[in-house]
Amino acid sequence: MLAAILATGLFMIGWPALSASAAGGPDLAAGKSASASGANGACVAKNVTDGDRSTYGGSAGSAFPQSTTVDLGAVRSVDHLVLKLPPATARDARTGTLSVLDSADNGAYGQLVASRGYAFDLATGNHVTIALPAHAGTRYPRLTATADTGRPAAQVSEFEAYGS
Image 1 (cartoon, one colour):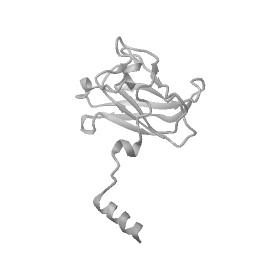
Image 2: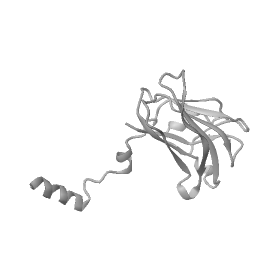
Image 3: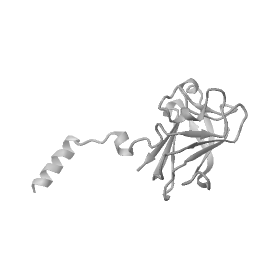
Image 4: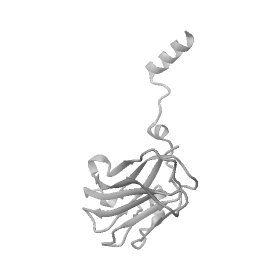
């Protein structure tokens, strides 16, 4: 009876409330190494996991497809990715055509999410969330861009991975 009263009281006052990051867990890609199939000057792959939205990874103009791979350091269960654009391009609503592959060994890759358009828009924070299907786990999630309606090249400011 005491446990029920305590649980009801905690529920009524809203404690303990879980923050969005606690509910989704930490960004598994934060600070991890990244590689890309190409780069444009200082817009290199390591920028996508540095936590600084003003830096980004980008391909040279008209260079599609462009792939960016993050090494999570170990096989992890990842249920969704969050991709963010840099603030300098935040005024541009656009659609990026993206697919997601994964690998446990950075050798053999399998498709997790088929290629489709994702809308980046200022009204939604200029980021997209890509839900991943249930799978055994990945160490190397790979994002592949094949088109962008706002730029002749791929750009990603932050490549975040969430799961357990």
